[in-house]
Amino acid sequence: MKRQQQQKIFALVIFFLLLLLQVASSYKNIYGNKLQSCSQDGMALTGNTRTGYCMDRHNYNGSHHICIDLSSLASDNDDSNNQEFCDLTEQNDWCSSLMPCNEDQDEHCQVQNWCVCQDTFASYLQNAGGCDQIQDIVCDSINILAVRAYAAYAEKGSEKYSNAFDCITSRCDVSSNIIASYDTSNNERNRTYYWIGAFLVLSGAVTGYSFYRRRQHLKFQSMKESLMYGSDQNNENRVLT
Image (cartoon, rainbow, N blue to C red; front, top):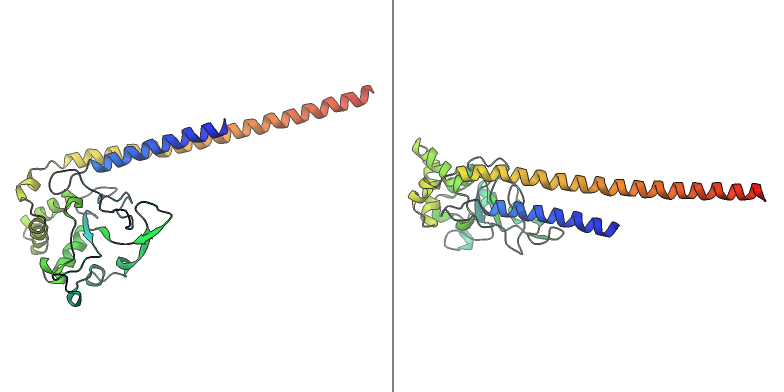
């Protein structure tokens, strides 16, 4: 019975994890299609939610929504002119570190495709000296909210974000009309579904664990009562004899 209950709890958790992944896959990329996973097998698992997708817990515009290939070289693959992301954004060198793998988080893999923040990417582009001086970006895995945010700032006269918008649209060969026409309310609904799914997973795990502990307690009590009853019977038998 114990094994059956554990299997049911495990199946419930897996079901809701798959539900969360389905929600993640319904986010849109800059082409207006399903957002693709930034992480691939053999790479470290990225994403602010550590699902491999460039989406954020609060999903505000531009937060960790841009997928960049940190293993690539800039400047037409000229190693001597490589403009590395961590160096130019003045961060610790996590870009070359090992982190839990996409396919097995008990193992560690090299950081490669990584979801970076909108503002940091724009600074990287600026410090590198232009769009042709940066590492590769993974277009199918860039959340459309990031470039929508760039467009909004560009309209207010920001050269920094205008350059970031132009860089992504030119490198990914995407029409600005597609970006402008996409209804981002879909992502807001997805955020709600994500938290509902997360709540259900947590609730299922807590309920399952509580049920398991309750059964163990009842089993212990039954064994204790059985032992006490047997002891009383033995004492009665001694008195009678």
